Length: 119
Image 1 (tube, rainbow, N blue to C red):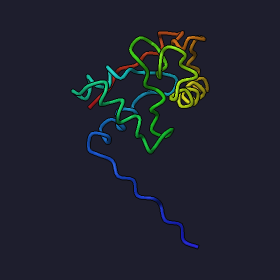
Image 2 (image 1 turned 30 degrees about the vertical axis):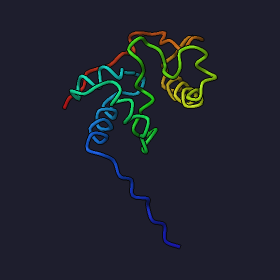
Image 3 (image 1 turned 90 degrees about the vertical axis):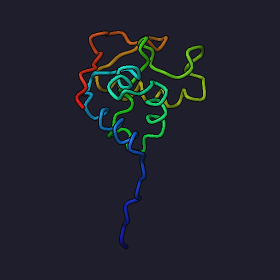
């Protein structure tokens, strides 16, 4: 039986976002704002591209969090929100890289921030 790889179509903007994501070292996190500044874009546009990342976790969208240090999702009862399942995956991946968050979903070690993007 011959296996055919599924062809994935992404926009030029998504390609640029995913290229930046690949620059973030393991064990570091960046923000939607830092990525949008590097792209001359908006944090919401970055979020939209990350939400539709067909290459995760190889293209590490889990390494992008809110500029407040919050992991993401709905900040109220964030673990029970519809996005909570994705947040749990994100927490697991980041934890495996040594990036820790407190019980409220806030980044513990601020030395994990990274924004040294090259275009």
